Length: 295
Image (cartoon, rainbow, N blue to C red; front, side):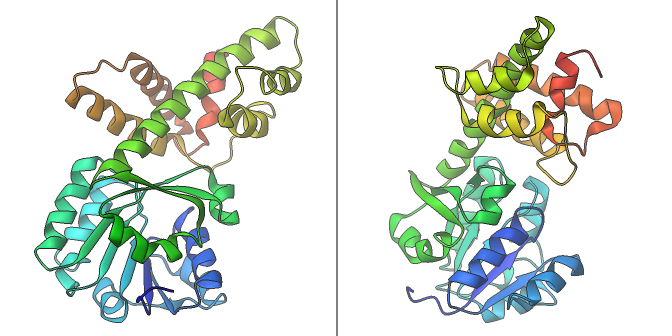
């Protein structure tokens, strides 16, 4: 499996833990994990993941490091901090940031990596938590094609669709636009769902019928049917705070490109409303309650 003999994984949260589990079960190489919290490492140790006490210790042992942290501050700290990945990298290693961050972060990390002859890819992930568990993620990659081919066997253990989007930063562009569209779609479905149920339709029947027509979408068949129809918005899924972060990054990029992304701005308003009402940790499908006037 390529020339990579050992792999590191930094950031073992809701998505990262499941991704790392698929990696260690399928890649056939040693996997070393690092997270500030001991609990995910305790669980992953049972699958064969070795524990690193620090990022420097992890970087000494691996040829490829995968990073999955919540956002820009965490990504910059892990990648560019004093005791971070780049500071402890050696020539020939590959760094893959699978976090969702603005494209500028990837370009900054790529430049720092290049100065040490280290290769870099931005490779954020799409689809829900169940896809991280099942190993069916969509992985959107920005960077050099040859570097992607070195890393691809390992990315394939976590996703069924590994797509090269272009140069450095384009993976992040694709992910931000994906999530912006997801949450705008979620709002549209919430509006339709609320109108239809108030007009006498059964909510699940509405969604099932929608999924058979031209209004069908991944959001309808997953987010809406599994959470909106049951009014179940758990805290161990993609929370409102993460949605605000991702859509805000998307709006920032839109402004840089001279686009007034009005739909995305409306979604941020709804999500901020949910957060202020105390639902920041809830699954982002909670916006249906706002549309319905329940929050």
